[in-house]
Length: 442
Image (cartoon, rainbow, N blue to C red):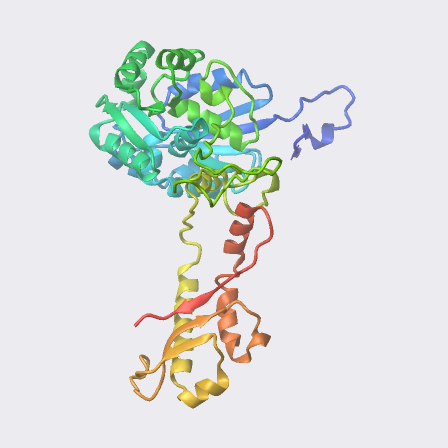
């Protein structure tokens, strides 16, 4: 017997024509989480939220760790096991959004590394982690200054502070409880969490952050009550994680009882107040250059337009990071073998050009090849030129026959689909190379 998976039904293939059987529709979305073996909080709070979202399924899988103390040493033991845990979630292709359900494990191992592990198990799923989800939640409610409460030991608490600072979030007040295990953290009464959150709040904080999946802060009604007392949003790790998984899976239902994160549209960005008046009837200038005083102008348009998004190599977590920061670092795009080939052939180009006389350069090159007199770095010959730059290496070879080798370099770098597809995915339209060059250093 085989099983067919699609977005409308899940039916055994030899039973599709059976008149005495009926089958449920496929779930609207399937979420999945890899969690610590000691995580009891998500086991309880996750299904309670899913019960309010018809057609949404949540699947949980534990990852093995060598120990129960929440610290970098314990976390390092699970670094190579995340992908294996995620891979047990079967059948393949059935997961819409997948995440690592531990805030401190996410930032202790590195969020990029965590998401790479998850992607290796489910390449077709959108992936996130709990630390990334908290950052996305803060962006959603428009919070840039926060009060932070964690249950962690000092080392993990400092790492959490560093994470927020690295993302441009100012922590105006913070406290940690100094607890070492999930068992201790899960035992904290919600009333105590509420009291500590109220105690660390400051008037200049835009939101209060409750960091750690083990804190029991995502039961129905808890966050609404705490936000009413504080008069501002509260972003909890569990709440933000489930919210982010749902959004990555395309589920944007508003749900009461889980704070402003689940009940409001993204925070509106402020418009500049020192703009000169425009003529009546003219369209508003959202990004004016003539203002009474210099200052920053917030972007009003979406950085990434979901309606125009192309498929590509970037998952939801990386797109969210670009949306927040406007810059994206892609590590290990090229293999060591590819990098070695590039270095060898860039050096080969240098030897070719610096082996020419100045007369040969004038005859065989054009303005795209920049050299200077003073002796070849490759040969040490003072009568040979020093190669400084080669411009526009992306142009087709027929534009300059002597550039054929440079064009091959371009094809393997700036025109590589691994880079081009990522740019197309971010921009939501076809892309072209405006400028490319090789710079040589002494």
